[in-house]
Length: 300
Image (tube, rainbow, N blue to C red; front, top):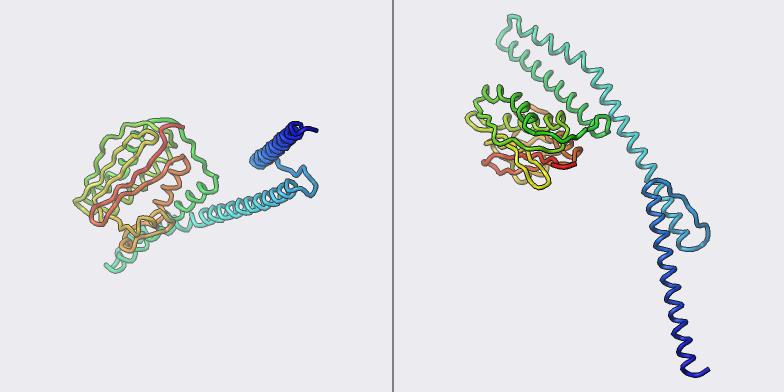
């Protein structure tokens, strides 16, 4: 064989090896893609039973998916148990709490000493607080476990905001706070009932922490992807160290121990926002008030 023949054979061999290598690589990639696709739709099963690396990878992926499925099932069962427990507690405590509230009101109507009236009023306050806590826990538990699902639909935000503001207007007047409505015309995709609940939680905090003579304002702003319901107050503001904590369940700021509440309103608001593809943002500084913004998507 001449030198040209040998060179030609070498080139042909090299091309054959290269083509074969690319074919094997492409086949492996296709197989991996098939494995991942079947893993995502829940139909994965081992198909290669030999000593190849692909077979070993299939075996490891099967073990991982099995462990993940078991973990997910355990978590789901635990959530169901917690939800059932909270529902049972709510059911079992409903009548005792209602009776406690009733008897306290009857007691307050009786001739009592000043100290007795103070004690009866304190019992009434604590009974109301207990009722609020139980209701908030049930709502949060059902949202987290999916028992209560949100059903976002496209609609106007103004009616939701107006209903929420109407609920807190009497309290604002009673405490000497000016509650104002700004621009609220905008459309978005949201669950009206639960979004109203979230706005009420933001208003509850704003009215609660704003001193007499202060103001609370509500407005809606539209952006490219979201509409934002903004609740601004002239309260004491929030320190930078607390901003990351206020959305945690049961968190109460150190200066808020005298205020009503159980520390679950902002947590529930964030859950509601996230369940419909939105989020909550806060802007605040000590002595400068706070602005809580509930962002909800404009499109599904």
